[in-house]
Length: 259
Image (cartoon, helix red, strand yellow):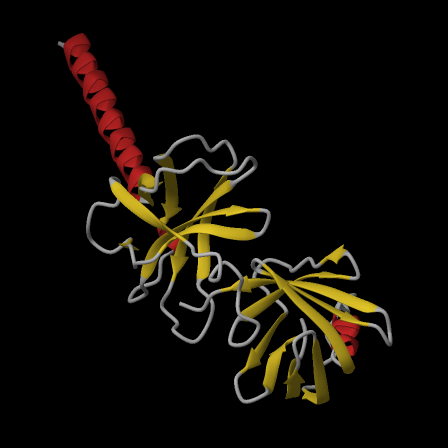
């Protein structure tokens, strides 16, 4: 009888451990959300060599700011569509009441070739595992980002890549209609006036906050000095290039579209 009771207790313990582990496994699976599917275009054309697909899961809750990217997939091995994608989004990255979407683009040498042109909502309450993202071809006159009313993210200063610490705001520039310029230099906000010709920008006095950030940012001072006097400009695809010949400062920016 003693042996029988021990064996029964042993089996009960194993069963309890199995249930506990099973529950832990289920809990782990519930801590991520899967976003997957295919991206495609329907035009019967062959992509140029070295074209790349970029799929992003984004928080699009704020209408007056760039979307916050939760996850990005980049593929360069593009043959014929469709192109599969899959993300595992941690549940702790999601905020109650926020809106999320997935977007796909195909680019070649900084020129946008295809893009989704409609909103694909995800991470709400439905199944996000069989998505079909249809991309539309971008007309050549649309492939060049507009100088004005575009959020230009600073990527390089004098050829050196700009590194932004995780969780920090990115330096950027917005040239608004009405000849107003505003942006963020990495530590301080700035604003002012500008005028534009076909190849040059002329900046007026730039006003800004006077914060002293520690550690100091190598790119902030030349970024602000760039916007002094006459500046040469050009847009190639989604890249803005600025060069100030008086102080020999140059910078590159990437277009980031407001949602």
